[in-house]
Amino acid sequence: MNTPASRAVITGLGVVAPTGTDVEAHWQATLAGKSAIHHIDRFDTSGYPLKLFGDVRDFVATDHVPVRLVRETDLMTHLAFAATEQALADAGLDPATVPEFDLGVVTANSSGGAHFGQSELQKLYSEGPYAVGAYMSIAWFYAATTGQLSIRHGARGACGVIATEQAGGLDAFGQARRNLRKGGRAVLCGGTDASLTPYGLVAQLANGLLSQRDDPLRAYLPFDADASGYVSGEGGAIMVVEDADAARARGVDRFLAEVAGYAATFDPRQQTRREPGLRRAIELALADAQVRPQDVDVVFADGYGVPRLDLVEAQALMRTFGERGAPVTVPKTMTGRLYAGGAPLDVATAVLAMRDSVIPPTVNVTSLAPGCRIDLVRDEPREAQLRTVLVAARGHGGFNAALVLTHP
Amino acid sequence: MPHLNLDELKQVMLRCSGLPDQASVEGDITDVTFEDLGYDSLAVLEIASAMQRTYKIEISDESIETMVTPGAVLDFVNGALKAAA
Image (cartoon, rainbow over all chains, first blue to last red; front, side):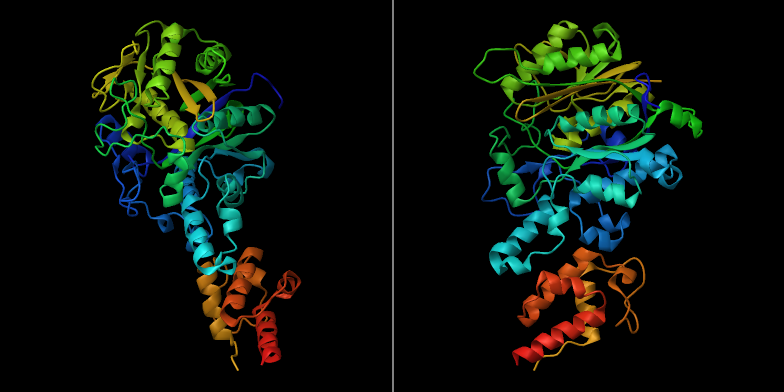
């Protein structure tokens, strides 16, 4: 079944995010413009310059996962277990019915097992090496979630993890589509991150791009004249992505969306004056999907919230679509940037937007920065027929990715 | 001289890995393999680590490989404690 023309379709969604611990809760909160960025209460931040985070509340891992497995894995994996359950139910797919080598798992990850790691590192430096638990060896690293989902669901097909920071969530879809083209039937695809621990925050602080404001309404303002950096958050989404023929063969008659186009680029070195890679990623993804800029009904922007990076994105969008040439939105203003979970959540939100013909809003942005001549959908959702959606994502270090989704 | 019995070992097993999915730890599990009890190799490593910390004994990687049942753990630990006494 090695047909280059085989199509990758999304058949099931699962979400665990600051805005909601299931798909509909997240979507309703998003349409209502309800921000889930809070003052950090998971530990005492008085010694840290960061005060805000988009945390997942009311999530009890043992509601979704046996307690033994909860103890052997990190929060990032718990969130993925729960999201995967939702996605499989939504897709009506029982993994046991898929031949084991035809089901794969591709997730993105950026922070590793920060909660598990925090507690084990504390044991290491306060009690010595023998106090460190054996499960640290498998709970901490980027690929833990892919591995655990693979074991839990008997998915012995092509599996992998992508570590390209926030771009990874789109790169995972690109990889899933590649795997399906090589002969797979289905892929559990997406990403989650959970970095709200002392060392997790310190690691993020090092990039110098986080906002240090403590007003949740004024901290993370992509494309705003008053932008001061981003706020981060935890959570993400997992989707069932299938080969369209295989999905039809098992009785799926309605797909949620098609993964129609994908591209990734890497930025040139800062010392050169060459154009950053985002515009080219968008151009290549549109070409891959065989759609023209004027066919795009909405752009789910990367929305870094860092002034110079916002300008790069605005210029990429203006050069591609013309000034205010396509509606743009950043619903992640309600959750913060979720690293490897961010773009999968955008994909899930985009699928819901296409389903309900409504663009979710960007919140808290009050005044566009000069140079950002884009049609940003602000405060209120905007009704619109959505057949073609572009999702953009960038990862710290130079990663750019773009994904084109089409409504079936 | 300190001594490890099956009940104490069961407490350690439950603390290290939570409740296993498969068989429970009820009854005389002395000669039931860890695999049958639902404890994988990392879980056994975890149990061995706890033994080393609590009883201040050395357990080599090779010795851990021989610990296929709770009984084997009891034999090893009590043997080491006796030797140290």
